[in-house]
Image 1 (cartoon, rainbow, N blue to C red):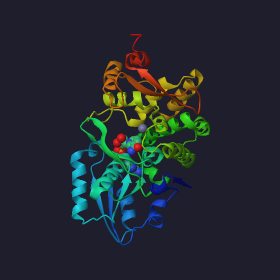
Image 2: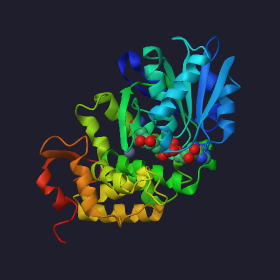
Image 3: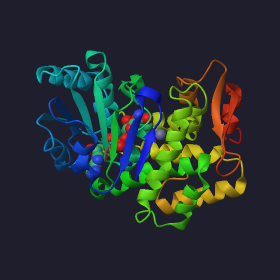
Image 4: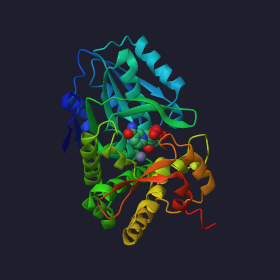
Length: 343
Ligand SMILES: NC(=O)c1ccc[n+]([C@@H]2O[C@H](COP(=O)([O-])OP(=O)(O)OC[C@H]3O[C@@H](n4cnc5c(N)ncnc54)[C@H](O)[C@@H]3O)[C@@H](O)[C@H]2O)c1
Ligand SMILES: [Zn+2]
């Protein structure tokens, strides 16, 4: 299957096919140029090697796994390695890994010599379903996520669902939250696939439909001036929860991004019956439906969120399956939204 992100001169193909990683050379120019393959210690080494085997002049650079690698220090070491490899403007960075490697590699490509080619080969459900397309790249500053970055579209995205076979179950499930999100805001048939319940069997369809939802939205609004906000469904409260209970900051039993998004979506679904169906889907997947998190702390985090504009905050609501609406909520009403009034 193939999708094309239509962004004028910055358009690119998204290839979705089992085993396609071994055929990257068919979709991208890997000859007569240096290829810097970025991966992390948690990604099976074979995947980066499969890419390297298709290059005339390539190297693999491996950073430690985890969100901690999306930092200034690692960013600096990657750029240094690119410089020492002798990379020029004609050369290319290939990310082979999850959202961390995609965001880090993309930002290195965006900033090295003011921008060189970037190819993304996502290997987690989260990155295959969501983060590998759309052009957002970046790193964290301390505990502030994605605060430094660039919009930098890849030249091609290669989604090989075979790579998911080695992914630990919790990470596999984590990424599915973004697919449930896509179904809720824009694709009832995608949501139906989750209610059907054969996720492993239907994974290619789930990835395809999720990417199609995101592609359609990004094409309308590449830089998030309007409709792209829809993709933040579940993320406003989700980010608040993630800041308090996320894995960043070396919390041992922290929640993953998708798990926080799952929790953040539920209060934003206006139709009670749909909220119930969503809770059932999340439960069947093994995603959390109750936070067990200190709501006051979440509230405090949300009040500091970079996306809050003065005394109001934009939240995305789902009035019914397949549609969404952006609301501007006065900050003073946030406690009600979080259910803090009842305490
Ligand atoms: N750019 C965007 O639009 C966007 C959107 C959403 C999320 N993100 C970012 O994505 C990141 C999270 O991505 P993630 O959930 O993929 O996490 P991740 O990249 O940390 O990957 C999760 C873990 O799985 C390991 N792994 C990766 N592929 C594997 C495989 N095939 N088999 C076995 N292990 C494998 C990794 O080493 C890592 O330990 C966050 O930093 C988030 O901010 C970016
Ligand atoms: Zn997300």
